[in-house]
Length: 179
Image (tube, rainbow, N blue to C red; front, side, top):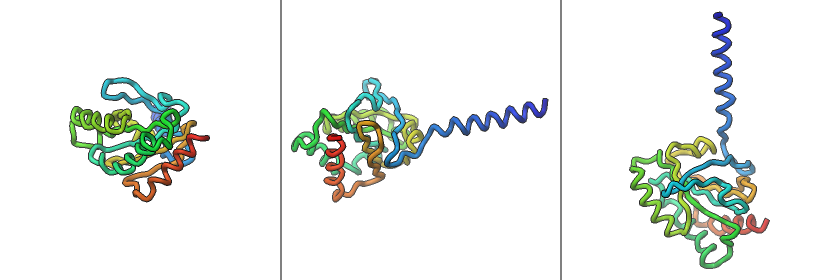
């Protein structure tokens, strides 16, 4: 009986280890695991909500929400003003890391709503570090992930993107939309 209990305990630990391997450290060249989040209206979205499009995922701690404003403005200009990037082939959106901040969720939704209108985009909410854990992202930060149409990670930026990189990233997005 004692051996059976010890075997059962070790089996449970092994199973937990195997199941825990579902979380990955997303890196360039890897297929990004899918997820499901809701927007402020409780509408559900997954990466397949934008099937056939190159996507830019901004995973943002609300305390860092202004960090990559120049980058997002440059991408927005390339899409909406210069028309270099087609909205039919590209979608940028934000996922708010609600757990990394002291701000209440109601305030976060209000701020996110203003950003969504400013950039004409969708903003989703991660209340429990779901994406942080699934993709191995860092908390208390601003991460930008560029995924191709097949959901392969083509670029991953953690923290502030230098303005000198903006055009290079826009050119990469443009090239990915033509693949």
